Image (tube, rainbow over all chains, first blue to last red; front, side, top):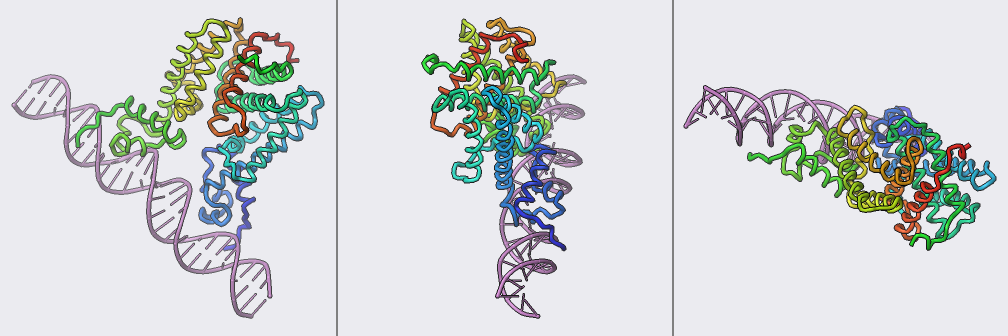
Length: 194
Length: 194
DNA sequence: TTGACAAAGCTAATGGCATTAGCCATACTC
DNA sequence: GAGTATGGCTAATGCCATTAGCTTTGTCAA
């Protein structure tokens, strides 16, 4: 029995491919093992079960997404360019990697160094875009939450087929980004809430 | 062996409770059967497997959510009251029913009459709120998508623990709703996108 | 009242998956 | 070239969903 040349990285990378093909929820050790031409228990030499495989996939996806957003932001100059770039890149990633994307949203263990770091990096990119609107501190936090909620909500509704009506989805997305842009631009003082 | 007095409704209702307690993804026929004091295969007399149970749960949840939103809207007068009411009710439902809520998002089979009807009812409520802003047609569709994306994104990020930073989440949510309110109020012509 | 039949339970069996234990071959190191 | 850690394997267990087929319970009509 010749060695298959596996490693944690190889296994996780294959898992990412499997997830993209069959969907995150159907990612299975059995499928990964089969694709690698290996018996299921062999995977345990590299990864500590399905739970950890999912966690590793989450870290992989967070990093990938960070790279995608980071390089998208670098291509924009004005604040609204940055926002648009980040939004497009986010949606683009979700489309291109329908299995990796959901992994991104697993509840993150605060003690997990790698996951935490990847999350933080992502957050930094968003903050850097919001800074161009002059937002910082609590304002930036609220804005980030609004942005993430809007983007995540949109792509998951899209993925689940939640947009049934005959109206161009790209256009609706552009609208959503526009809403965020004007909101960030005209950010009003907090007391307006009361 | 005395009869347990089950029915499709009883089974689905128990499933909803189980889902709320252990999470949608851990909803299992075995758990439902145990709670009902019945052997697993007995459930098949009432429900055609886990897949259909999930579908039935989705319909239940869509209807519940519709009722919650509908009665919330009725309590508001102005457009922004309606929006705020709907937003609070949506988030409230997601909090109160953490297992039912995700069921709501299953990909909906367009041939499924009940699910379709429940979705439509929900959509109507949202449209009625947007109508108070003077939005209709394609504008209303874009606005609905933005609203659903924002609400869904927010509550799922919240549920998954995605809001780690020390900033009051209620406040961030109020901000998000405020953003939507001003966007709907000042809805700009479509060509602004270009 | 009784007897037939549908409905609602049950047990047993199958198959997929994850996980653990423990065996054996491979490859690297000294 | 020997020794050992490593990376594969098979076997076994347990949980879950699903199907087949049996038995009991109610119900309804003669």
